[in-house]
Amino acid sequence: MKYRLLALDIDGTLLNSKSELTPRTKEAIRKAKERGMKVLLATGRRLAGTLPFVQALGLNELVIVHNGAVVYDPSSAKILAQHGIDLAAARDIVDKLDFLDINYVVYTGESAGERVVAPAGSWDEPEDLLGWFLGVEAEFLPKVDLEAAPVRISLIDRADRVEALYGEFAGGSFGKVNAMLFGAEGDTWKGIEIIAFGCSKGAGLAFAAERLGLEAEHVAAIGDNVNDLEMITWAGLGVAMANGSELLKSKARKIAPDCDQDGVAQVIEELLA
Image (cartoon, rainbow, N blue to C red):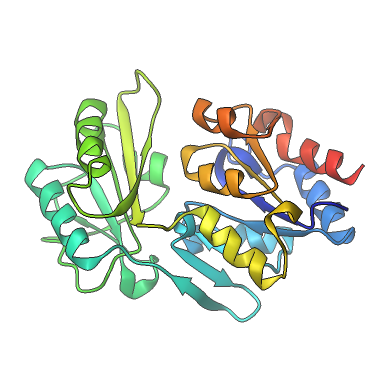
């Protein structure tokens, strides 16, 4: 079997559009493990939102969360790697977002990203942006004061405001960070995910593969969005979902069927054939 490690994104990849883990996908992963393929999850979610799927699938490999900023070992229940945004840069970012009255949350460094805080009075929108786009609840504080390098800063606001701000991140106005812009042309809302410079799902996957003694050529990775870019380009077989971003699909070696067509299961079935 050429590919001995398979990395899977969760939302829009492992799960269908209703956020369901289907029986066919579960069975395909079970067969892959039975054949000796190691399977890990690599996601933008925090650990609390990821472990239920690790448990449901009976996975034992490292778990990559916060887009690669944190790597967790379920066997020892320990954080093996944590990369925080430079504290000075993070403070500048938070000050700028407060000044502009942009909706944002901070995944705190003290908690390995499990505690999520936001400034009081933010996220006062008709849509449930926090729940729908980030899937989290935040602890609202009078002011977000950073004492440790945060794992991640996530912001969602009107597309024109976010696009203008992304230009500042891309131009290095806040120092070196990895900033990823989410949203399609014409979307009302867009978001930016900010993590430490040099940090990505791809770097997390390389770390996990090295611990297993595997080279990139023995690794397959499947994702659907821009935060999967480094992961699918690093892996020997990089797969983009048909429902994924156009950028990701342009860089992938293979396009999987839509997540509502059990695309992950179909790819696994082909790899095991």
